[in-house]
Length: 305
Image 1: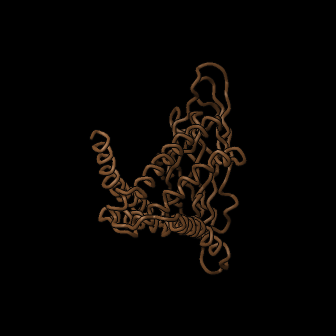
Image 2 (image 1 turned 60 degrees about the vertical axis):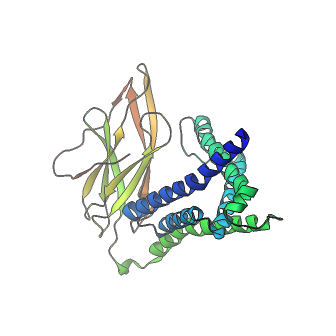
Image 3 (image 1 turned 120 degrees about the vertical axis):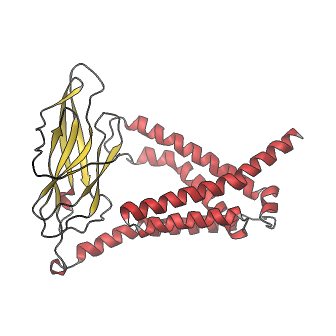
């Protein structure tokens, strides 16, 4: 009796918890894509997740079929993660790549376990009864659904590069384009690092872009700031983050990789100068050697983390 009650509780949590989670994640994904990126592919992903959440909430058969394929694909990707870490370099210039790999590995394990639980429930007798589905005598339907998910994700991931190639291939006379470049880094106060971003092009002005940079506190990972394209020939300050060394004694150097507009949202005449590398020198906790930012007529654009 207790085992049966526990099974019913787990089934109820999957029946209502998973659709609600899909609805929330899909809404946030679409909202973020519309607000910051204007990314139609990411917006489509959010809409699909919300539609899947509604379908599972009302126990539609097509929703069960799609959910099984998605769970199967997640399990396959989670099983492939160790090989990806061994043979690839997925984490960029982190200070402690092993710790970063283990950190991501925890999330991979959690998502893989959740996908396995959901797939097991959907293929169980209780799951088939909920969706009024026939007995699954073979697994080809799950593989086809997973292949559909994979094809859709591949199309979305390759959507933006195709658009970027189209912008790059456009004739120079079609429109006046911006040309963003980080001139240098400067210090506001004692620890706030800011980037001086110059628009060397003949167009643009006011569009939002993202600026990614190496974490400035030796913790690994990347930080993200949002800026606005300066008017042609002008410079704007973009706040990155506070820089501080975790140890009190001894000098230290941090290599900071910066990249302007990593998602290629701003059409530019030249994207090759969007990536730069800087060295920050610390004496104990504090940063040394960076010039103070000029407070005069340069508009400050506060970054968000």
